[in-house]
Length: 104
Image 1 (tube, rainbow, N blue to C red):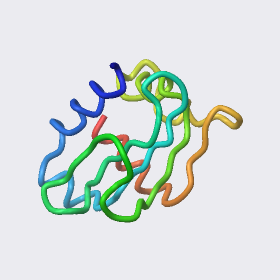
Image 2 (cartoon, rainbow, N blue to C red; image 1 turned 180 degrees about the vertical axis):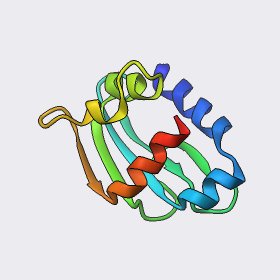
Image 3 (cartoon, one colour; image 1 turned 60 degrees about the vertical axis):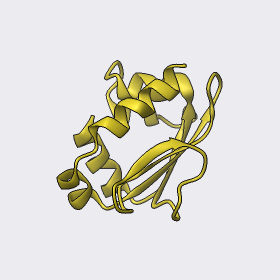
């Protein structure tokens, strides 16, 4: 589905340099179609992204609908527009969230 496809694209976009500058682990709690727990690990060697809990503790946990997540990463919605109150939430390091935006 679109969520899995988005994570495939993210995994392909990871570079050593980007990982070095970010050093963060993101966990996404998605509701709706293709929802569940997903993660992007930009800290462990090699990096990874996919379904399930991250291999190490997350620095940032974001909750949103899977539709908003896909829109966020396909740039149909500027990332922070997705995080309006009542729509979704972010817990953790906001600076890391900004660095994630650079990858998009």
